[in-house]
Every structure is written in structure tokens, then in C-alpha cells.
Image 1 (cartoon, rainbow, N blue to C red):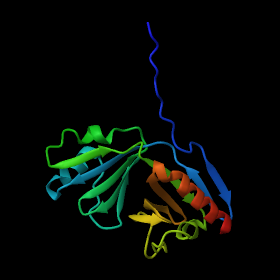
Image 2 (image 1 turned 45 degrees about the vertical axis):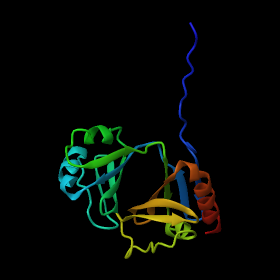
Image 3 (image 1 turned 180 degrees about the vertical axis):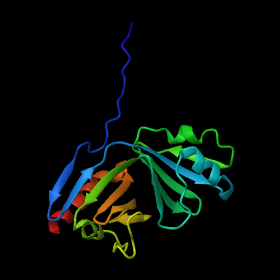
Image 4 (image 1 turned 90 degrees about the horizontal axis):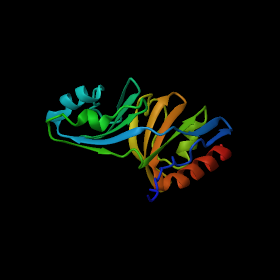
Length: 182
């Protein structure tokens, strides 16, 4: 009998971290991620299905039981599940018009933490990251250098940055240089 080769996807930059100059960078553990698009009529049913009320205001997010939902547009959310749940499966029985796409392997999450976290990100991001303009819980799709990213403020001096796996080398290098220059 012939042996069957099994491919195992390795997390990008698994375990990478960097610290110093008032900021630390850490590649986050793999998580389930879902790109969710829905019409307003389906929002309540989807919120119930995933166990988190879908935020409906710009720059907002919601967190419950290891699941974070970031508002990206009037009908678009990024759902991140770090508790081992299955957000796609949770949406399967919702009858309202929606699109739920698993993007778990597309993204890499990077934590940027410390008193110089905002300055490190602002080295390549035009977003105003002052607490007044971008408070804890704020989320937006923006850029870092020449890469699109999704940014979530998780604490006064803490951010979660989500970028596509294919751009993660660039993002890690950019943040590392910015952290060293801080």
C-alpha cells in the first residue's frame, strides 16, 4: 500500500517576538477568522448565532467569550475566535442573506504592546491613534506602509494588527524597524 503524504500548514512566524524601546511585538497564536457580510435584516440572527452582537457603528468592536467582532463597513465584519470555536458553523443555520468565509489561514495577528506602541504603528500608519480619536475597542481597516491591515486597540497601550499572511514578512520587518527607532 502506498503512503499518503499529508501536508500540515505551519503558522507564519510562529512564536516570533521582539521587545525593547517601550514596545513589544508578538505574533499571536493561530485563530479562527471569518469574513462576514450581511444585509441589515440578517444582523440580529447572525449576532445570536455567533454569540456576539455585531457592532453597527464605524470604528467599533465587540468581544465576548474569546470571540471578537470588528466592524469594517456598513455590511462587513471580521470575526476572530481565539477560543477554538467554529464561527462558520455557527452561521450555517442562519436563513437571512449573508456571506461567511473562513479566512483563518489568510491572516496573521500581531500584538503591539507598550507605551510606544502607537508611535511604532504610526511610523507607517496615517490613522490618528490618540486615545481620544482611537479609544480602547476601536477598530478600522487602514494601512501600514504599503500594506492593508485591520487594527484593533485592545488596551490603552495595546493593539492587535491583522494582515494577510503573504504580507506578514513586510509588516513584521516594518514594525521591528519602527520599534528599534522608537
